[in-house]
Image (cartoon, rainbow, N blue to C red):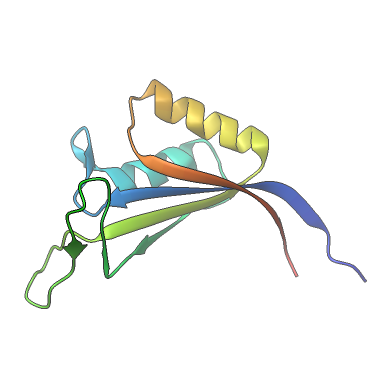
Length: 108
């Protein structure tokens, strides 16, 4: 029996833990928008440290309750779902660095 794979794309958004879109945390807003578009899922991951264009190191320290850590949001999508998500983000004026890669995915 062979597994059926779907060809699609992986979108990875790189955000800061404190980044905002309007009055909301950017990662929460992005996940909510993905749900509104009925996308199959998305995940947010917190990094322990990282830096971006500013070359300023962002990291979690033991005594901080709310850190300034980098976040990674990942979505595995069909090309049509990708187009719908990016169109929504552009229409809402959402700004974030992202990467796109071609993937195959499936269920076992």
